[in-house]
Length: 151
Image (cartoon, rainbow, N blue to C red; front, side, top):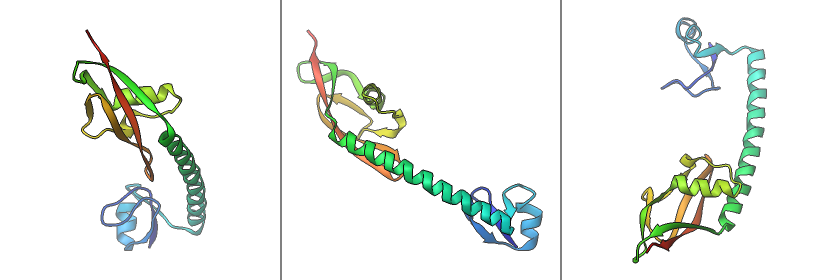
């Protein structure tokens, strides 16, 4: 019996896979639990069209992420924070601060998409952060933290 999986099933397949299973397993478990649907000719056509549309949307998303990545590589971001005489910051710069600064410049990013090595920055200097714009598009961008001397 051929079925189309509606979700990932361990040791069986991933969502939207067409697989062959034994009749009893399909009829008594997969279909009643709504984990799979019977793979009829019309269901296969609908699945093929859905996958085609999803691939088209995915391509557009990757193109958009790639153009944003190019813009991020060219950006010159400077962040200021209060610091002592040796350049050690009072507090820390985290991915939240970097996200806020980038969003002020018009990038619609979430804080979880930015990774800073060590998670926090506690001294002035140049740093590199990884930004995940799409699961296939990850960009490294550099920014500078400037210490604002506090008297």
